[in-house]
Image 1 (cartoon, rainbow over the protein chains, first blue to last red):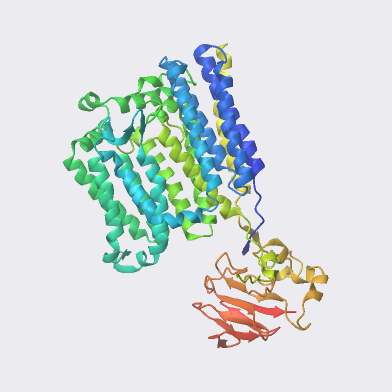
Image 2: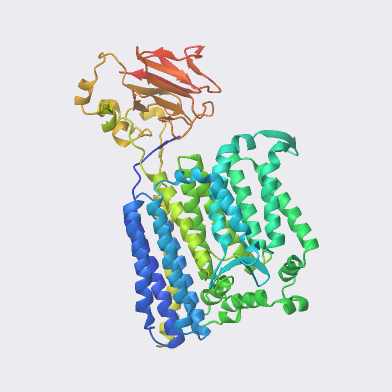
Length: 460
Length: 176
């Protein structure tokens, strides 16, 4: 027999500070390790990059103390550590590929980290209450779908490596799908919080599964058709899967009906099967997945095979940072950053990285449980789930669990749009968790406003 | 630098990564925020066991008799007015919590003032609030009903100190 009661939650800002210092120390150790292993000395760029990284972290932490004092203390350190380790690996690949400071990807990644953290800080400062976002539900929906379909606009969208998921404006290129993930989560949360009562009405029961009514199938069919459209027109399996999975997961959270998951999986299965019959780019992906080492697969692309070989050569403890050859794989710093880590820090290290993601996602879901409003609950669980699904798709792709798709690993992978989107996502989670952990005002406490007499002012 | 240094750094990095993971898990364990679960011993030591703090803000959750005495003199109503609620039987027997004029919610939902762990109680089961003549108990459309004696409540009903009110297997009464 137990009773459940509220405790005054600690703010946890000092815990956060401690863990941030620990995270920065690990990143510094990894950076020094790379320098020593490759160049034989502590790299002189440590000071410059270190100051930049510490500056970003400190600015974020101070903002947290001022603007979100009750927010979860674990989210920021985990994100910082992942971002820093990504920087180290990109720097290590810069060294391997002989890129000097001017064209160095690590410096650009650091710049993007600063911009992304800046935007996240701005979100924390401007957005005082996440429930404001609910007012823009349908605007967010329209904006999200526009972002998702933007790469199809002729003249704006660019086709890179078989997928049309980029837009280019002048010298800048951007992947709008990453941002669409957040905007669509806002839309789904606002939409489902309104319609969940209708969507959870029980219909016919088949094989022990209570199905929803046929007339309520509209939204899931629309989402499915859009995701199939993205798959066919943009040839991007990753965004399509992420978008549809996000919708189904949030539908399940909103209605508590397992049948929606079953219907979603069935629809996705049908879509994937038909796509495999009709489209050659999907067939190629499936061939690479099932027979990675066959002659015709290696003739198409040996990227996946190289990544697997890299991880195999890393073994249990890895070759050590700077001692492997991750640069042999194409996109070793973006899509294939997990095999790069697998080779150099081994299975033990990669499992620690994956656990960090698990903990980040757990904090997101815990925030959802703690949130007191339905919209916040749905938004936090949707955002956390999108990170989870993205990690599954990326790691599953490079380890041959599912066909390889072009998504980036949140925080680790090189790429500005990915960093922007994921730091903003973290800022939203922090805002919701600040709201969730803030102590409830005591209704018995004297309210200064209530005791005041209402002033009646007559004009003229 | 020697190969030994590099090997030490490389293994040290792995150890540090895992130490970070365990540090996070350690914080996590102590930081299951929002609720505190207090295990209770059997009702034998009813008076002696420390009473669990009912959900609510901390100053209000101090049982009424431990409150500063000055507070009682502020209450204008008659001295015979009940000011706290005591669970007399059921899983939470022995719990007591102060009544609030704005009303307290009783049910299984964690936002209730008295969180019942009772399969026969509804999420938002009943409400006790201050009416014009005294305290009033209102059933909030619960599945198994709220009873005073054998009678199931259909409308808000005034209660006085000592009246036994039953929700599911829990019996409470108002005390002075």
